[in-house]
Image (cartoon, rainbow, N blue to C red; front, top):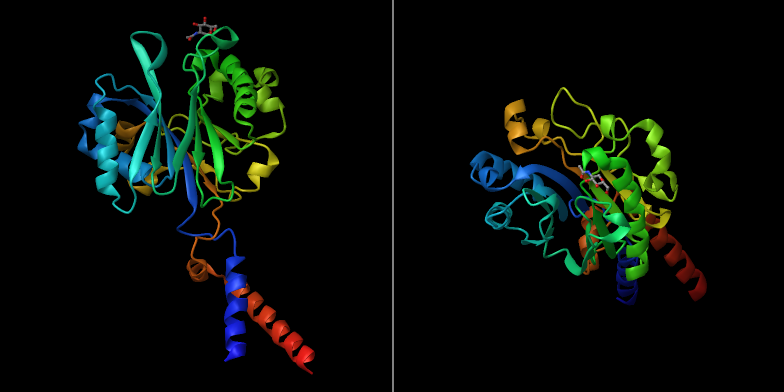
Length: 324
Ligand SMILES: *[C@@H]1O[C@H](CO)[C@@H](O)[C@H](O)[C@H]1NC(C)=O
């Protein structure tokens, strides 16, 4: 009786020690340039369906090129997400409309699952800093995600202007330093359609971009990865950049990639381009054990079971020796 209680205790303490449980519970961060998302796309049922499938894969999804002047398309999208995926609740936090001309404005929008994420801070980088370096100043948001290993992190979004990519990317470095200071954190990811390739970021200009030359910043979406839908283009425009090795360790290795929704959902070129001319890019954050330790048991690997058994064996051996 007493020994079976002990056995249970050992098992429990082992399971409680299980961290980084992989599988369905991985935490996905995405960035997606929706290419002129507004009234017209919101009225296209097929497009809205595909968007729902894509966005509900993510715990947090940065949307770019939201051009919703009547403020109806975004609420409609959120309501579609909630009816498409009833296992989670989705909400969004959006920037003001940003842009140098009245006629062309975009919003940054972060869609997130309210059951895995809470917003703990937001900060609009001011327009007049760095001699007005950006067309669309970053709308920075801090998230708390208790089931991730990193717990709390900041996302700095950027959709660069193609003709000013080098300068905007370099200025993003100053935004990063500012945000790190302001919120006393190193847990930062910069992400979005950086236009960081092909004609917009010449090889010879890369040495002027501190976001590239500072080796403590890790670019997860590698050069030569195609993040564009058109079969005639192959450019790594969309990027995910992580601040520091410590954060990288809390990311699932090799999980950063574009999500090719065209092949995934078997869409024609035309159907895919109706949705966007970009693929989303995504990365998985490691998750830790759930609050109830036995949930972890379902994901235990064979080696985990072997380890448990060997722990139990040595425990009983030890106990026996002590009793003798
Ligand atoms: C590029 O940047 C300069 C300097 O910040 C700005 O004056 C210009 O309008 C920008 N070009 C575009 C297309 O936004």
